[in-house]
Length: 336
Image (tube, rainbow, N blue to C red; front, side, top):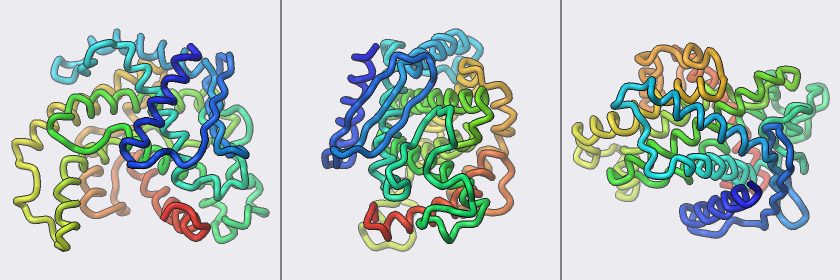
């Protein structure tokens, strides 16, 4: 079990280097505890960063995935997840995304904000240590934040780490990678749901992560935008203000992508929620038509006040806080 977690970190670091095109910028120490609780954390150390993870994370991922294999029979054939070989590999990929998420707390620059405090997934203690829980005495970095904004800081940091970890794990768009996108996204959703499950079981700790519905919304938004990114980058390189229609994927390609990636991932999230023990998840996601209407509205127009689904609305609430945090990080000499 310990070796499986160590191997996942090695793979996550290799994937980071492959995608970012440079090695991870500090040493990473891994500490594994034989503990049944779902818990992982990352903190700065004198040599770099230290990631701590309980074996309970691996146990919970394995048991949820075993449940999922049974639940997949409930899906329509066209929504089944292609396992691409060994079903156990899903567990490894879920761990790799979680560890990539932890690595990206550092890479984004979050520890410039925390004064050395750890950032945790599945904690029992105080909600993050990113800001003082007493809003009368926030850390100096957050002096300009309102009481409501301070409460949202940990959630915004989590969405930032989600975004970068997901970009790295999924990789660049290619029609040849549709099956991989579907497969990797399924692994990612499972971890998000397990974190939500933990916070529901331990409500006294307060909310330190966005709701799984919001994290799904961000993930699906990235997947929906993915086929268009090459054409957007091409237009940007050429100095064009508008992407020419001829640069965009064809309607046939987009229809194929929707059938091969978007629909299976979206519908698998329901079976995954049942497998992870997250009741009421589908209701929190909202009706399918409303969900995707919100996704494409945000892609086209940014976050607006007329979003219909809970996940989209939480993301909209976190966006200005996230922007302020990135500005602070840049001002402190972190990620531009």
